[in-house]
Every structure is written in structure tokens, then in C-alpha cells.
Amino acid sequence: MVGRQAKTMGPGEQRRLLGAANRGRMPERDRVIVLLALRAGLRAREIANLTWGMVYDATGGIGTMIEVHDAIAKRGAGRRVPMHPKLRQALVALRRCQRPEHVEPDAVIVRSLRGDALRANSVVNWFVARCREAGLQGCSSHSGRRTFITRAARAAHRAGASLRDVQILAGHRDISTTQVYIDGDTAAQRRLVGLL
Image (cartoon, rainbow, N blue to C red; front, side, top):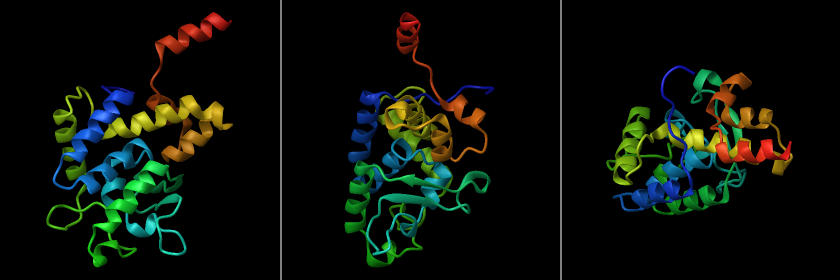
């Protein structure tokens, strides 16, 4: 991939970003924004356009899957992403503090202070500001997605999954795109060569 990639975030950096989100004027919403990137690998456009119906189960509660519809996904590559427990918990908390009309199935989840839907560019700008507040150099909205994909690839073997499963979660059409997102780990490479 030509150009500079977004930096992946380690556990400490993720905590700092969540800390910055918790200090904002809308902490419940801001925590959801961060977790949609870090724990579901969503793009800024997907975060901005995700509706409550895409996270509800058949009973109207917060489900265990995120249904990213083709209409909001890049190149129409919708997908189903299992819901991380921390993300589910954050969505439940956000839903509790919303007005009833803002939690209808067709209502967007992430709203501005005025109650309007955020645009993708606003989500990108939000990440820039929070990363700056957290002192995170080289991080952006795409850092959450890249962190999710890298962590998923590294943990795939423990779950009995493959790189193809990571590709599906990321919504990539080509596995070579997924591979570009995965950050290498020098220490792991040394350990691997030591085992040979």
C-alpha cells in the first residue's frame, strides 16, 4: 500500500483514547464511537451511518451481532460482525440516555450534540481531536479499524479461525487488502524464527 498507514494502537493507547472519550460532553456516545472502531473494525462512514436496527435482535434489544448493511459499507461489502461484550454494554448505556425517537430501528446511533446524524467526515475529525487530547501520535479514525484487523489476525489461530475469517469481518473483497492492514510484530517474528 502506497503512503503512510494509520498506526495500530496498543492496550495503553486504547485506554488513553477511551479515557479521552469518557471526558467529552457525550461520553456514552463517544465510548460507542471508539468501540465500533476498536472492537468491530468499522470505518468512519459505517460508524456515522450505523442504525439501531443494525444492532437490534428480533426482540428489539441490543443483539449479539452487528449487521453492516451494503448501503453503508464501502463498495457495498456489508457483513455481520459478532458484537464484543464491551461494545454491547456501551450500546445499552447509550440507548438508555437517548430520546425514544432516537432509538427507532431506522435512527442512526451516533448523533451530534444537536441530535443530528454525524457525517463520516465528522467522525474522522472527532477521532483526530480525541487522539490529540490523548497524546496519540500518528493515530486516526482508521487506527481503530487497523488495530481490530491486526488483533483479529494475531488471535485467529486461538479461535480456530483463519485469515479468511478476518477478511470477512473486515469486509474486504480481496484477502491481499486484509494482509496490508495487519501490522507485523518484530518480537513475534524473532520468537517464530527461534522455533525453527
